[in-house]
Length: 153
Length: 403
Image (cartoon, rainbow over all chains, first blue to last red; front, side, top):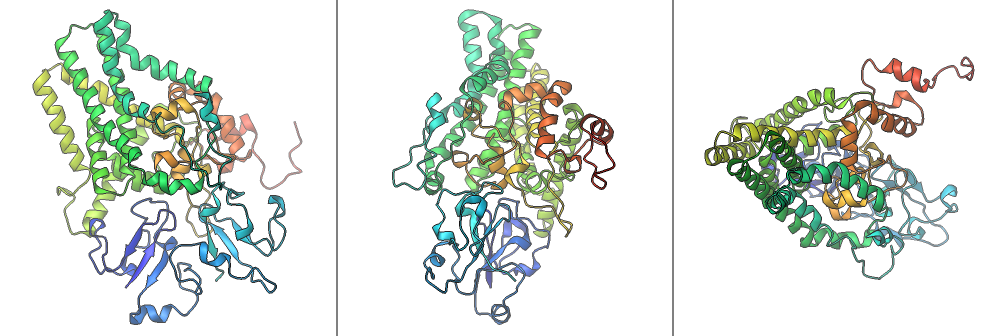
């Protein structure tokens, strides 16, 4: 049994509880929720946008967890916690730094630490954690907190 | 009030406690629905019938003027203060208190109509005044209906019932927000569409979509769409009881008074829907879906005065990008498509189609960077706009000589 979260409003669909008001009795697996189902709280994200946040060790989810490409881009394997930014920041600001990419959940803009953003005044290699907190998405104006770690493929 | 403009934008990231300068000004949103009663009080005091139109004068003249005077507020609460703002019950309680205000205005006005001598002009002025504030019952219901708690959603149903538009809360949350700024949405107006033809598409379209959404939901639960769990029928029953009660109490004059105020209440919603996304269009992605709802898919207005009586509804861009954010924490963003006045002024302009188009069409063009293909255009108007703005020839840039 797993939980899936709306990346915009934080609504969580818990397979154990279902959502009886919406017509999903307790125990309804996410796979049985219609493909075109929109978040019942905000309606601006669809089923395919939802993020897997808590997979329990049942047989079927255990097989899908290690393979790195289930449909709703999950949190990186390194950080299985639900909330986004904090734990990654102090990962490795040292020499052999692994650069990461960050995704604006509002518009899909990607900040790539390796490339920086010249236009915004961030040299290549500027870590996301080094960007000022009041910085806004250059495309849509969403705040820095609206960014989540972006994992390719 | 001017210093509201300088509310704490720059302080983001500092440890200083954020002070919401508008905190107590939101009370204006609570009292605004009671304005018809203030008008009636003034009639009683002075005997001047002009006061019957208090709301009309304030809404269509005074508020637009004050919007022009006080201007806009671009400031945002720092993101670090938002969790506390969202948790602060005070803001939520204000929306609860607004609900009885609508009932008071309704019952008070009906009582007046039934008991006081009035001529036809005064009667209509009062009915339209009540219509405007009851249209704002939709605004109150809107704020409440977006909340996740059952209590808030019931308050939404209760207040929407005043104006007989209980299906709004389904239609808006699950329909309009999902489909906004696409051709699928009957509540998004097209460039060149006038408000009167828009109304004939929007009002039935909205009801149909709400009903279908409830049908699907109840079907999944194995219930009939005619069951009492139908969240369109629930507020409808409240409306029927309320209106029947008013009719029983205040007599047959209600048969004329109630429909006028209700129609004008609905008209306020139609006006809001009309101006909120005029012409805007989300891009279709290669997979056939539309891009996500982003802030620039709604017309925004930062005008101070009208925002204070509308629970920040006019910060519509952030609202549509993040529908569950509460009114007190809605943000402005850089480079949003912006209305030149608050909603009241725009509602007035909308009733005069050529005036409205002269205000808005070039703004839509700027928004689309001159590309008519990125705009929703009323069928039959494309040629007109091609002539007026010149199409951006997509294929052959050399073929078109400059004028």
